[in-house]
Length: 268
Image (tube, rainbow, N blue to C red; front, side, top):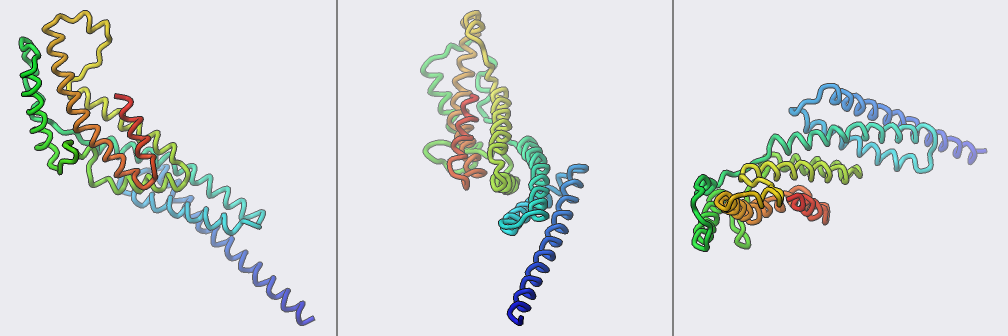
């Protein structure tokens, strides 16, 4: 009888601990749910760091509930389901925050050689022009980047360096929540748009073959010069910098940064 009483007492203590644990999970879940709903109603860029902390709390809570509910049914399973639903609500907001940062903090550089004979229509492209232009590009690339040369290629900051850590945090939370495909899709789309805008800045107009055939020689000659100049900038500076940006943000997640860079550059 004493052994039976001891066993019953132990069972009672375990059950009480479970009830206490469930109540604690319920309180934590209600707290993060309120924070997520508040953000959904009134998002603020000033509170985005706090929102990342909330997402981290949800991830921790889900992990704890998964461990707690391995052999449990009923309430723990229900709390786990609710926690995953809250996470699904939070992820689109992180995607919007990702787009906002990438758009608002993107950077371009204005090379000194952008106006190099750009308005003169009477210069015929020849080898001497190529050599002079190439030298201009090399010098301007070095002065514009203000960074160290690596494999004879200059790099620039395509996104304001002050937000890189924030972008890495968003990547970490989305990858940790198995939303890596959504992150990559948003990231690639935003960077493709940035590349398209930069091509416009470089006066690199996309022409169909029909349009090219119709151009008179002096007009075509001018377009060829602009294409060559823009291509050198894109290949030697922009794409090198884009690859570095992908590695800075996604370098901790294996080959994802290479895949994203490949998709971005393919749009060009």
